[in-house]
Length: 116
Length: 110
Image (cartoon, rainbow over all chains, first blue to last red; front, side, top):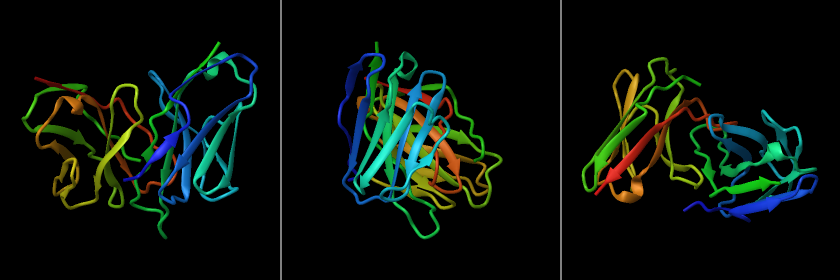
């Protein structure tokens, strides 16, 4: 079974802090994703990565950065946390095929982050 | 990605089959039907996907109509742990972002 592990289920931080969210997958997947999920807004893609040291902006990258130094690990960084970044953060991974088709994304259990 | 329509909610008795419908009348020939579910306070869980043929795995069965304009997810023997929001998505490939609609809130009752 695919296992995507997020380092914390719940996290409370203060405004202005630098926050690190970690995600590790054990299936040797090439692609990794960070989303946030908010009531009424659904899933929104923040960043994704299709290879080590590669990253692409999603729909809402402002205020975030990412790091992928190893294939299995994808980190999300809140440079200076603000209250509007209070949310559920979800990491996902998927395998690449030659035509990039037909491969589901598998999610971790999420980190519920509160910024006070 | 084509738009999908699902009923907002449905109830199911424990031990009975749960049949979850999804309409996707504008689906393109190269788009797959994916199903995910999300149990409260957890991340989305992949269930199954298919293109044309019916599919079955250890969790569920997916029945796609011949014209591909609708599909049904079948949970053969619903348990209380199947209570969740179920999302039907159509997409040409799994690259890039997923977008969930409102989904169907399924409540399994004893």
